[in-house]
Image (cartoon, rainbow, N blue to C red; front, side, top):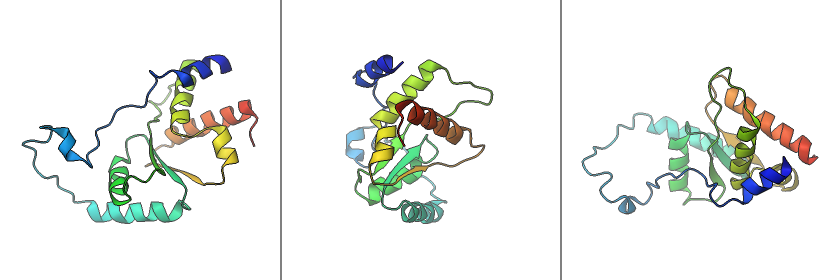
Length: 158
């Protein structure tokens, strides 16, 4: 399995999902023409929550899991001028009863590697890493933890 994973990790076709950068709206062309201003009724709470996440991160990397924290990621990348410690982690757990297979695990490892989340880096860099998400049932975090735990064991990292 390690050989096939190495091949996936080095495959330039395996890129992270594309996402428009709304910080530079001039590059969007006519995409926003005719759209009205959004109702940001939650802005104060978003700012407060973002400040708490930053305060609790210990100055380390923040990996925004899935898409539920896109608003916080967008706010913080605007405020912190796209700080390299702020990263999106396109990782999600599917429906209840779904069982990950070997292909999914390999693809998930490629995504984690491209995001800088590997057993080696987690064990051997002194910088803290925080995973930011809104948790409902905990299935995504359970999957992420299980994937990392198995990978750490396989790589024999502390």
